[in-house]
Length: 619
Image 1 (cartoon, helix red, strand yellow):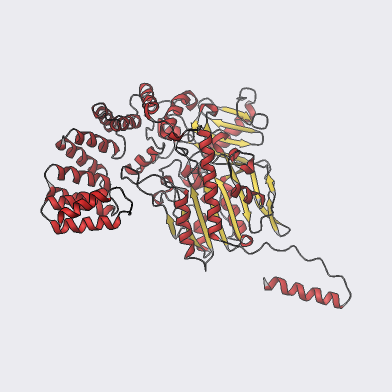
Image 2 (tube, rainbow, N blue to C red; image 1 turned 60 degrees about the horizontal axis):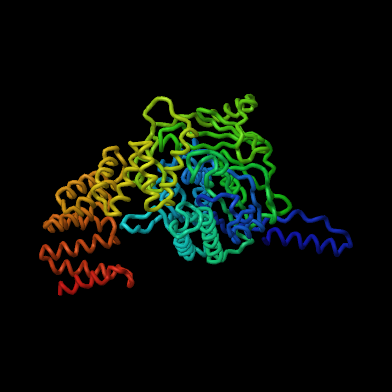
């Protein structure tokens, strides 16, 4: 600052001394930016946010919008978490970064925002709330620290998401050790993603969705307070990754269709150098985020499909008038999950075109809800946009078009993604002709259905699609958990026979076999599961437990040891190891593992009395 201010003062004093009027000062430069904080909120519809006229309570986002620039017509490149985040981080449309669906690794070739900040000397930290953004999928590039560790669910498996409070705690702990450095921080919150709140607690899905949005906003407030960054020297960016459907166009949830219900997102820039109270109605894309942040932070040119949507003016940054831009979006989920046709979309001016077996064209100025397909009356506009779509992406994908990691595919399927049905060749159906089936599958995957409603929905899916392996798997667990293992076993076998990825079907089948005291069959099933997922600690632990219970504690011990080497906090596995040692007459080792388990268990853990009884029996 001294290099700018001092010459100005000297010039002013000299002018006053001579009795002359000083020349007008040049516009002040925006304040130097020390930190950049990027916050992404999963599954966040723009029209539910307070600053956009929505009903959800979002005071933290609203305040950032009032103090900065709000973009009212911002769109994702895909209604899919990884794909859209990859576009945000690289500034590229999906064909340019390769992450066309959850579970597909993002190419290491494009430069990422984190990479650019790291090269500029910033400390870079990313903290995510869900498995689709796990480091294995490539968005770790450029981050010195990447917080993606998930907790365990009630079955002892690694969960697929974590609360926003845990993400913010993780981020604040990292920042505490970086106070002397310039920081680029990315925080991803998963709260608005289904299931919303606690589905069994009552209230409509939309009301619980709004409550989840309010919780995400509360965590943003916690983050901003905990960071304590100088607002005048920190750039804050808040973006949704995609929207959510509640029956519009017959869609439930997201990922299949490319209507604006699931593509329109909130986008806010606030803090250092951003003029407050601005709202832009020009259409922009999530690919514009990276080049805009890079421009404001002074990182130099950022090679991207997007463009900077804020420009310097009068000492601050104001929205750019974007003109007649063409913006692309897509969803290959219909093809990769169900074997249906993919959807690709292009908007320009008043028109939005969707490439599909039955193509669609909407006048989004007159018909923002995309309810009237006018393609028959506007063939020229449709043909022009169809050519632009094809210039960016065809309807086919490279050979590597689905998650290759079986465990990753299984975890994504638990969140309702990556069904992996692919297509068996031939003509693919238009997703519009399968919307009822897609909606039913989405209701099941969302976690919104419980009890008999869930069972009924799964049976309906299997009537329409008897070979659906995920429906068989989920129905198997519904039946097992209600004590109907005799009916569950055929469902688990059907899922296994259909090649469902991961070990969950084997674990369910083994659970039923164990309940029937058929430990020989359970051992065979778990051995097969271990061959499929050798790094799965839960599989190894269950195999050890079954062997120990069948009178083979010596054979059980290596499997239990392996489980704990993979996951030292698998408490059921450690209890099983202590018990196997005791059964094998190795009391000292049994006592050691029991004491270690008590050390690791929380003081209020309900398992403590049973563990203490085991320890007492070993003395």
